[in-house]
Length: 507
Image (cartoon, rainbow, N blue to C red):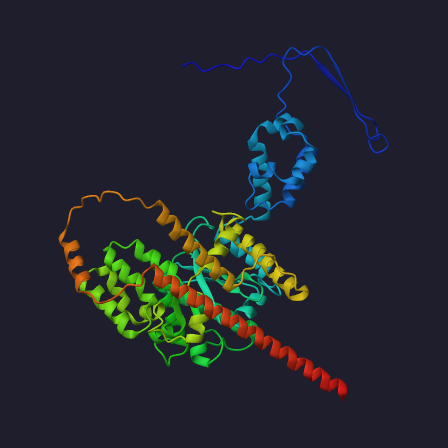
């Protein structure tokens, strides 16, 4: 291998520069070249400073946290600047995509010098939120075991949260990249026919200690904003009556331990029995993935629909006889209370009027995910702030001018009717596509024989599709009665107000 030598070939062209004696009075310089070049002209790799400055100004107006070269090329402001031509047509140097990426990264580093991870969040918190009148980032807390809690909510959200009778809690895994997860509090507000997010917490891991600290920080900040203690129905006989959640045990026990520390007249199990409810959808999905027999799955799926202690205990006895480890946790008092209306200590008025699933929370996941997924921690917080601001601004406009955010009927009754239609449609579709086929020969095992024997000896009846449909229709009728009751009460309040105005005018 030989090292190549660079042969210098001097150019015969000479340049003469003519400068005035006073550049202020005569701001011009004359350059004269004499001779012919004996080489090719240099490549146009250097972008003119005027174009660079224009692009930097445009990038500065964009959200550079999640901006990439590809996204920037589709932005309306850049398209208006280019006036219908391509960026590399504006100057050949931009045929190199790295130049555009460099300008974006340069702007990002100047705005966020500490990056977009936790150090960047702390820097933004100190810079923009710590001394603000109504900050979005309310608390950043490090726990001894390396855990991290970032609590985000506005004062308006905290006040509204304190007035709820129930709310849903759920965790999103898609929006933030890396080890971070987003835990949210949501609720469907019938008055606005809208699902709102009331608080967001960004965490690393889901442990009992982490959730205990989350609830401690959350309710402490809410109490600071509302000026009094946060009320729980089973303690203060007013306030929050139910928390609807998925099957994550760590958040349930973390909530119970927080309440037991603050209100020691009950242990954490009693608190959960009076407050906690598990989403039926998550409950059934969890059963579907368990490595247990079909008969055990049917029994477990039927427990939420049973109305008496005897029926539930009969089902639990059958699960115990199956000797399957994955079925034994239903004996835990707080788990049984969270899935069965026969064992719960939540008021039946609350239990029957709130949803039995966290679909509202799932809809907020899908809604905000349209604004971006797999974001950095700082970008996820800023996106959440902008999203919540839009949602709550819509609520305020609805309150002020009575203009809803959608013309579609999204009431609880309408959504129940649509759910019933979907169930009926699925049943009809499955009936149409069913064709008689020869049953496949399956290898019989000892477990299957035992399950068959237990099924024959059982006197417990599993609710079938028809019974579940009847239960859904019954729930629909209850909702109709509830809506009529609310309408009558509103009419009564209106008549009382008119009577007061008439009496005042007569005096």
